[in-house]
Image (cartoon, rainbow, N blue to C red; front, top):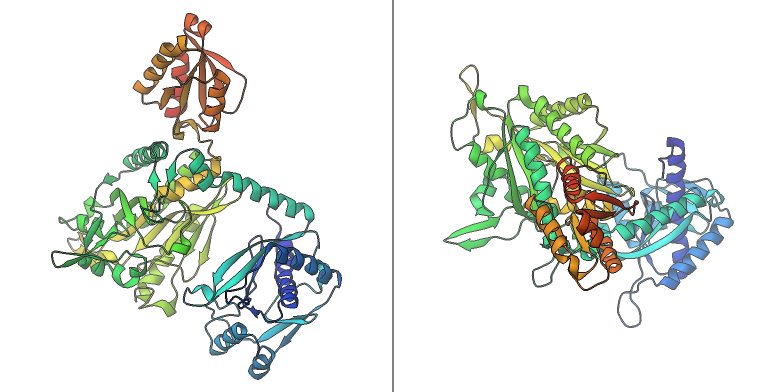
Length: 608
């Protein structure tokens, strides 16, 4: 779906914001005692949170599918009534009186009056304003904007989608509310396109395809967020590692390996125990020390840098590792391969002088671009995350001068690169500004794929130095980068991006030789052996199934090439090639077919 112009985007925002209010009105008409949370417009639609209280059985009430149908029907009636959205500003006393029966609204109002949050409970620096919008009998604590009246909302371009539990203000210690999600558009056609895309996304869901293609599993006895890679999934990991190692070798990286755990002193020194402990697994006590499994590799790489004296002639020093890291993600945040607790990171740290910084930073950006070209990712942008002054000393290291200096350095490099980016305040790493790389799959799903971070803190904490041209010691800058992010998230993205139809070089099984009858088994086995000798992932299907069933099973497993062999092929030394894309069958000599497949793999072609 093409991106709408700015004026249409504004209209769409108003429609989504307004229909959220109309939904809340319809809910309160059905559940008059319900508590009302927040109801913002979001990408592709809107949501609203409700507290329905408890039923006669003492259990929390939840919305049923019948509820959603009736709420949606009532919303269309309210739209047809064309009630205006009326704005007014309130004094604190008026606000407290107006919303005296709505506990959640009163909490937000007090937060806005005290400063520091907005009407959705998010952090805000804006001047506190207490305002409300009334629509018919429903009034909400809100700053807008909205449409002028309900009649400006297309009644055939929205749909209520689902209900989910959501903790009030995202805190698991707060009450669990019922969140209704809806989608809203300006035209019925746009709604239908969005619903079609969601159906396509469902078919491409990496969790579904991961099971069907036998790539990975999760097991309760192993634990949540800890994927087990099956042979076919491990093949993809190894191909990605091979790709990255080749590119990094050509770019002057040196490979290192570090342990999976360390004494707590290392993470205390790096600052992770202060700033990152909520995402770390609890310690293990051994030999009188606390040991932590590592959440990242950087403290270990700093130790390698510090293992001997360094000169400016040694820089830039690029240390790369495929280290497995462990992070204690909240159970409610775990999501297939996209959010896990055990992850294999395409990690590296570049130690450089300030004069070398921009060239090194841009080289990393160019590496991202090469990956995007290879994976046919056409839509992407980068998010520059900066610090916020109020977080200094707690969320961020307290050095305002270096924050501004390094942010200016990154900003200048990004402008020079020409890559689209946007700035996001208060999202930096605790040790410096960072770039997060956002990519879109072919069905429009957005993913955070990689990161590129500047570190002005850890080199100093680890006493990392080099001798400059004047014979004086300096502290290097450190660039943390992971162009492939974690293999888990990258593979999850690629599964959905390709719908499991990986390019030949990345396919878990590249060739399945299909003999027509038992008499052709030896010939098929010999072809598969010749392919495997060249490192091509091939096998011969020697099952008792008929040829068409064998072809069907290979297609279900999304095998790119299915050479069929029978009497004629054995006599002529040929194969009859069927491809995954169902293009017309072709005939190759066995050697020509091997050469053909080998070329597609070595060139990492995206075409069959």
